[in-house]
Image (tube, rainbow, N blue to C red; front, side, top):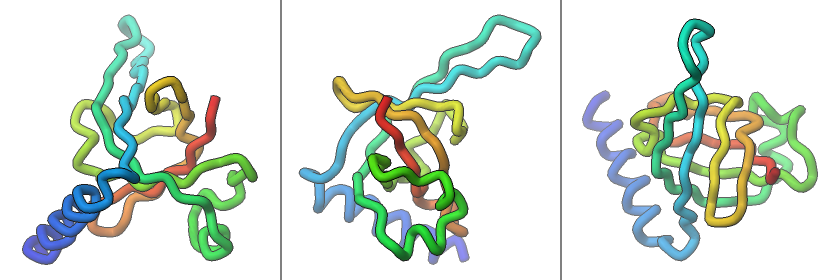
Length: 120
């Protein structure tokens, strides 16, 4: 199973390399507050490919009831998150644009996140 996962990881990296003009680089930002000490801001440099939602997404994604017409679907390699954990309390900044993470799914092999992003 590990070899199969490695093939998929390599495939995702290849796709993000080939379609480089479609890849948006950003900063994933998350504030962690354990309630005992001062909140800690953590960040990761991430890559994301934007897509529009399709009818099949509404039928298959766990967060489909949250989708609004102006929302964006983002595909992000799971390996980009090093310091942060995926959370709906996170924000992603792409240049001058800031998006909140309204929903997320991780594929069964933990290779790529499907994100519900809302511009704020």
